[in-house]
Image 1: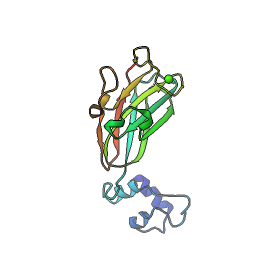
Image 2: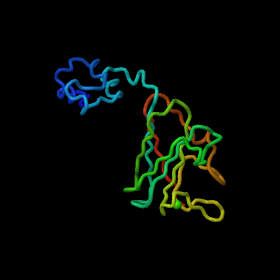
Image 3: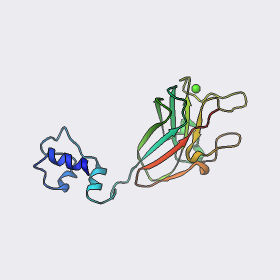
Image 4: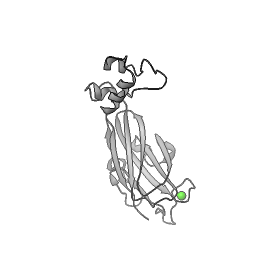
Length: 173
Ligand SMILES: [Ca+2]
């Protein structure tokens, strides 16, 4: 609400929140935009009319300040954990031991996330001769498989029309 109040002060000629919903301030149309979610909150609509949602993945137990965090998002059991079939993959340099990434504009549905920390920066999850990870890894709902990745159903969660907060704790090799 503070956010809206600040913008109203910046735009004294804007008299109603309905006007704000047009996402522009009359005086500074190029400089200030109003996020849809802020408008929805201001109007008490709680994201009514917003069909896409965001997914915020917070990954803990990283090896501090080493390599890259790789977060892959999947939406079907058949394609789960094959990175070429991911809906989207985010790569982010690791700073500290906890890191968050956000997938935006997701359609409602069932999703699962696979994560690993690419310590050597070669873009792949290093494994030993038995196929066991040699770099930190994890899945949504902290699911684990026996001799490979878990089933999609064990890692799956629902996305509807509100932001989903997903914590994942990495397993260390
Ligand atoms: Ca690697």
